[in-house]
Length: 363
Image (cartoon, rainbow, N blue to C red):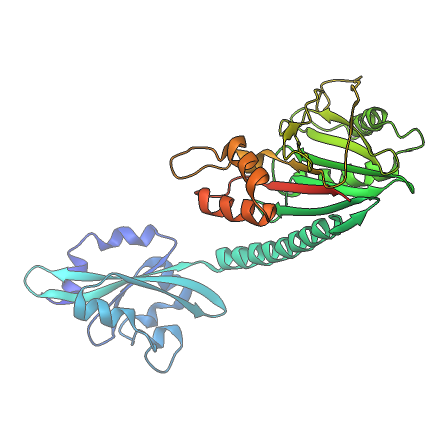
């Protein structure tokens, strides 16, 4: 049966209602059928012409999917540009009952709009990625410089599950004797959480510190947060303290930070948790107050502030890293932060949370 008879005797006329172009090409690259849409757009003279001639080309395509379809029976697709428009072309074999493959059915779908949309989205994603990279760089630059601050030497670990982190800490000089130090954990990840970490940093550095009262400072931070008028699901936990190098006193408050800082005493190598309770910074409570705790620190003592991204890191069995492993490393390792980082990398199956640890040593 000739290909033209096969087409006439089949249900091929149903494709005349399609908005895509449909044509049939034989083994000699001749067009033997074109649906109504293709004829309307390109004219009836494409029938009987070479497949490439009907697309205003003077030679065969460099990669002819119809050839592969006709010789191997493969269903293939490729993108092609015609009259400044982009088409997805799908080639499928047309079988005669006794003659095997007699033609290639080609469907041309105009994807110009989709390609332009994808290009626009890619450009916006690229711009967004550049903005996020800039924001991450700013967030990292906002971290305190490792070194000395009024009798405290600091070092730290800092990792984010995404490009931007909701964990943050800071150490800053209040006056010649006092230094503020804190760690905070903002709910969530990404841009929103990162913006709130910068809010915390700038707010704490701008709050009037004349009375050197850590409780009043966090109460003022809470009031400032309420002024943002954020949703109730946005909140911040923070452990904040002030160290006085003259008296060696460290006063601190805890605003909902569940990762209790650890004190490693230099003279006895004993561990002490700096336990304190208090509400997180959120919109649920309009008025809050915090109890101030005070301890005396000695030369060589080390304070470890951390977030739950460390203790809640899980291995492949779903088991958490836990506080005991953390304490064991702090108590028994010589290079504590290096050992902790190595242990975390070996233990966790996948990083799903931000984490941070700040080590402050009394000098």
